[in-house]
Image (tube, rainbow, N blue to C red; front, side, top):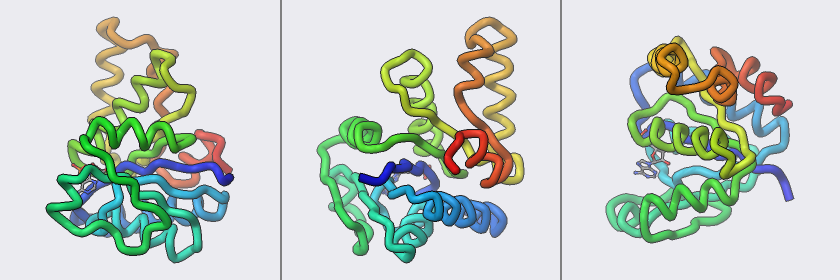
Length: 180
Ligand code: AMP
């Protein structure tokens, strides 16, 4: 079975062509490295664009969605598998179970929630699966400042902070997470 990357990213597309372009470059690198995709299962936004990239390259793509979202909007029609769960928590647990590592691209609060959860579970030893963040155009500089503040004020140990890989380019993220 191929290893799987779980990608968290915007359900919206955003308004930055650089963010979209860099997200797709990273998808291509992950495809070339042989990874299949686990994600939120929607067809819209940056999320949908990334899924399309994996699907077009012939990789397996697993979408995981709660019933409520399926009732509200279309799921992606090209998925290898759609897994339907009850709640958003069930969904995150399933994403974590099925994936080998996690990457956050730019997105909104949903994306932030997801990557902080996987990083925190790794940090406290509930999972041994790394998390990384693509910091295109400094999108996550604010998160870096907050993590440094937590370290500075004694709420986050430096070694634990370094478990979350934050890289400015797709190439740097691939090599810092040792994915290539
Ligand atoms: P946000 O960053 O707030 O746009 O939320 C996007 C993240 O939350 C994605 O990584 C998805 O896993 C999840 N998510 C939020 N909205 C949806 C949706 N409509 N369909 C599927 N997943 C979603």
